[in-house]
Length: 147
Image (tube, rainbow, N blue to C red; front, side):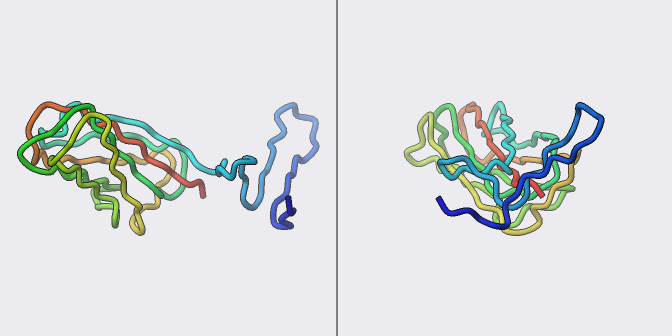
């Protein structure tokens, strides 16, 4: 394993028992998984009914991936999920859940590229156009890379 000189640990000494540990550079597990990511999970009870849900980000960062998984088959038409921050659509964040051949466990995703910066305490909106038929729950996982 080659050391990266940009990575460092810094734990300043003080009289407090609550010394913070500062991690600089990339921080990863031995398997290469970043430790500078937070994942939020939320759901929409019925992807086939137009509406929206909101989830609050507990951290500041950048939304870098959004996943969806349906809990049943949808019918008639595709359903579009549109993520927004402050009522502005996240660029390349929309997810199309296809009705053709859909089944429980189908996973779709998007990789946002702009308008995806989030502040701690801000709401993330996920809107469904309700284009499909059948009452099917969709579970969403939002990946936030820490600032």
